[in-house]
Image (cartoon, rainbow, N blue to C red; front, side, top):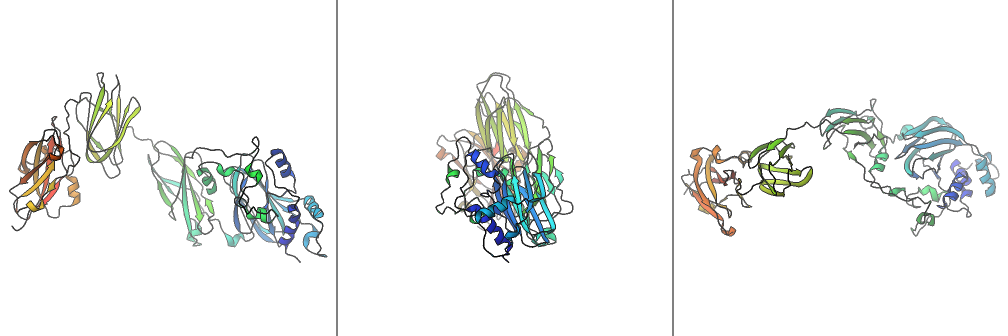
Length: 568
């Protein structure tokens, strides 16, 4: 007796005779061919124990066949819609007795075999319509040819099919725990923490798995292929597939269609009808994010928008089979950002501002008189801070600021300015800000690009140290201070000393070395040196230089640690 699958292929062989034509993209002829039950140009055999991916044209059914060779065989069929609901039906096609392989062994005429297939009425076993991952399972199925017919009525779409006669041993899809829900354990303005129970596939079966978390603002997803379809930048994959590339190999090889070795697309694929042909269309990128996190079952989603509803899904994927199962997703609305008090800036007055780590502060400047220009002076005391300035809602400025910066913007009668200061991720920010419509005299001193203090090692003695620093073309007052520190003076201590907004008024009088005025019209010569005397041998000293502007505001250069010689 011939094996059953050879009989099946023998029965399907006449459908690939040389008189058979490939389907055209003429819509009327295409639909007529599809309605012909004997027309199997887009059908294929589903391999046992392997997941296949394929596509559907809208309103165009597609059929797959699956062979069960022996009676009382377990059978499981799983259909996964990707980005559109599917209607699918599984039926059992009773094979004609003459096709069993018994008898003379002489094949029947092709036309007679074709007529036998047409006349066979299948028995419907299961049907479903929707976008859930649905399956048919039977512990004891009769032998025969099983037909799976799928239809999409909404749009062209992708889908996946998996069929097996050994469902208990295969287990390609990871199992879900007894409680498959995703829980929200923590909720903030910009963060949400998710937790879920681990999959038994990892804990009991010891198979490699990984979890993927999906975040979006539209709805929950029921399959990972639906997520991947949404993540696609456009719908270009909806173009008619290329034989040998997008078609399953079974589509052509088993039904007699020769593959095009030259790699050229067939005419019905390359030249669709201008009116009826299916064209690719573009769509904007989806607001969705997929993050695969390994085998952790807790994850914090960050950088979310306040007061926004998000949908969260978790998928567990088998690393061996690349097949996945969806947990029961959840949704949550992030907390509303606390409304901050807006600080009013007065024209020409310096205001101190403290911004928390990754926090923000809002300031408002409303000049009382008409003005042609408005000037903002920003002095960032520690790390960089981001500043945004809007005039009557229109964004005029967005920059990061380190040290002292000056911005001059065009004015407008009765205009109001909103300033947003945002701290960085390293730590809290401190700054001083001044807004004015009359910047005739700057409250902030001008600074050189390099605010370091240079120490001359060769000029060190047991009781003195010689240093130098740069100045500008503006005549300013410079004061230098010294403070003895330990030899193991750490970088953390030094960082605390780097607050450039602390003026000389916070220093002890005993630490003051001297003050002097200095400037030079030639910037290349705008450098001054000073020798600090009266130091102790072998000791370390922290040196600071303060420059004070016309408005009395002081800025500190970068601190410098020097050590006197121990022996002279």
